[in-house]
Image 1 (cartoon, rainbow, N blue to C red):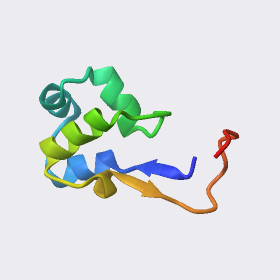
Image 2: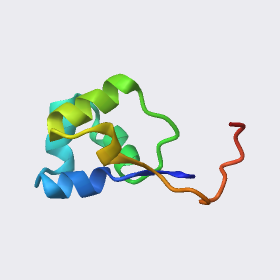
Image 3: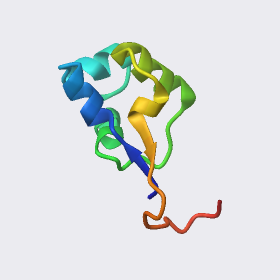
Length: 76
């Protein structure tokens, strides 16, 4: 997928664990883990905003587009 989730990088920079971030954002540990491990197929803007608020960052700090990465077969 051409979108890479750098949540683990941001969490390390802010020295925050998955359980603490999940509690701050109001997500389950499992759902946040799916996002952190780049297995999510979608993210709600409200979730992205909550993560950015909790980490004091911008969406571009978490999401990255990588051109030429393998296509997921879904239409553009």
